[in-house]
Image 1 (cartoon, rainbow, N blue to C red):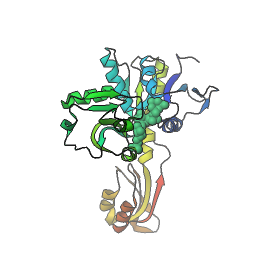
Image 2 (cartoon, rainbow, N blue to C red):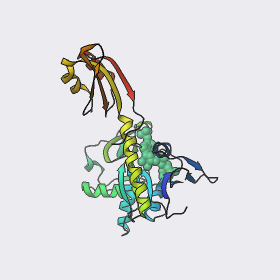
Image 3 (cartoon, rainbow, N blue to C red):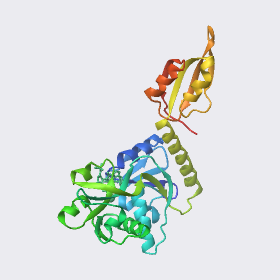
Image 4 (tube, protein in one colour):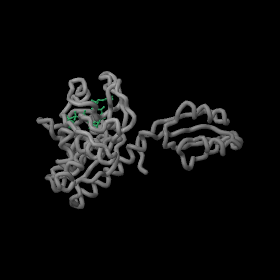
Length: 299
Ligand code: PRT
Ligand code: ZN
């Protein structure tokens, strides 16, 4: 089958998003074989192939209609969009949905001993970054004039090398900043992995598959947080127990053989169930508590 019939998804080849992206595809039911060149994963049970590329190329591949879909960081989407707009080119890709992994933030960081008293403190200074459009946009919106020094990597050592005064880089745990004696002072952008698509209408069969995949992604996201909880409860305690069940709408109440005072309560909780919740349920009169993982779910 050819491009007319098979969806093509661009995914990062090797990096922080790779495992999560391929895992998401597998959890949506895709079984694939990896080609000899390791660049194309051929979907064996769905008309969907995965193209493995550098993350920075993903928006372009989707924009140029080489791929129908892409999984890429919101930070890259934002930077590319501003870059296309600066060149007067239509940013021809649409963000379909956030994917709940690859979370990080793009932040301004200053050397430890720097006296920071708000964005005005960096007025007239040099900011090193690999996200020049995003930083320029932030500076403009903040009303600050600073020089953007565009680097292709190792941004965190720029102040020590004298190439810049402050930096703007991705942060997740903050340990890289700390190791380089830098301090995060402003969040410019919150980011997570996004599913993007070409705005070009697809042939109907492909649109249908895309819709199915979007539903499956919703299902995968729901089960990650969801738990199935079962417990026994005195009838009198039901209002309190329902109140305590996290994120469940309508629990199933089942009679128990041999007692009229107690019932079994079964509920899907769309939030994680923590020990504290179980302890509160027990204190409210629940017994025989059981929490089970949910394998699949369609809303
Ligand atoms: O080779 P390719 O171009 O495909 O990969 P890449 O090196 O450009 O990207 P990669 O794999 O590093 O990151 C891919 C995407 O992961 C990014 O675009 C973000 O959307 C997301 N992501 C999430 C991160 C981080 N967290 C992150 N911490 N990307 C980079 N970092 C780096 C950051 O640049 C800094 O160097 O990790 C360091 C900071 O981490 P902490 O934990 O010390 O704060
Ligand atoms: Zn990259």
